[in-house]
Length: 451
Image 1 (cartoon, rainbow, N blue to C red):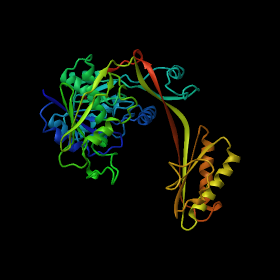
Image 2 (cartoon, rainbow, N blue to C red):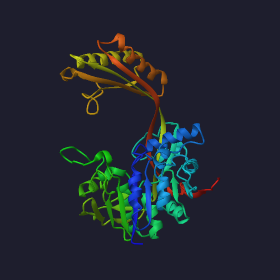
Image 3 (cartoon, rainbow, N blue to C red):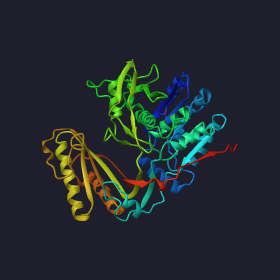
Image 4 (tube, one colour):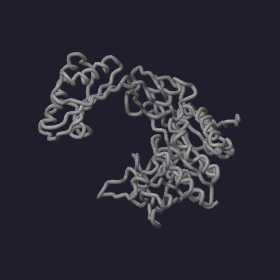
């Protein structure tokens, strides 16, 4: 074959459910192996899925799975487009069963579904702490929610070699979702570092969905993007030598040009000469990005170095409870009344819960770029301010105390406070580790048709 075509249908679990339909229709017109790639697994998402699996062994896969796959399963079946996604999260086997259920509900034959597992680590918290990168979060006794290594492309390629229509994974490197299909389709040698680097680069450009086609790029008057409400998601056309073109379906919004591609190229890149992935270290120093037509950008020059000796792993731990409460002040003198409300809550908690770390934001005036300390807000002029109080603690009662203090501002605070909303939910924290490869044993299995 001359090319492989991969569509990037999702960049996170909350992505648009209708993004895959134009991609499949465009892929159906392509001459060559075609794949639809779903990247849905942020670190926090995986940890939450682990919590779900503990509560129900039949859960633990991405809650987005049904919403994302239902619109495209029939189209993929009819067009021969194969699906690769990490929506298996903490329970790829359960995800495979759910996909079979969706297919039955649509009146479709059950696809041949491969399950890639083996990313979960069986290391103790003390062993993980010894491997932590640049921090001490794991040095204290912690309740580990999840510990997962980023595995590479080989098991995905194996699953496709064995005839999978859909490959469901847990924690894999995002770029492996594209590299696996390329290794399978082109029969790339796993020692051919430059081709592995090119496939990793293709995956890196696709992994965030529409970020490379104008999403998260737009800045009105600076970087304008047409039709963002119906932005087209990306398609990579990859040649056997590894050179590729980034494009998007016709008649969709967004833009694909040198700027959008370069911005995604540099996304989350610390050292352009050494971007570490499980299968290869990608060197971007000689990459060339060139516009060849409208919404078509050619990317060449990826080079590879030997894969790292260790694998990255993410460890999520129980960080106690997070409490958030909000209240609004509006009209003349609103900012001064908001400042008084903040002082009241801060003063009362300093006496009743002195160890509780409190953050107070004046949304729209002093929040993201502001400070949590004592601030003279009187210089700010606004007639509409929303105060947000937040606190985190392993002592749920202290968090509840903060929520009660904010709600009490209705009557015991300054004039005009309204619209209190409050919530308390479990908080997770994460740390990164480097683990020796022998701790990670990927495995491929298939869901048998139980119908």
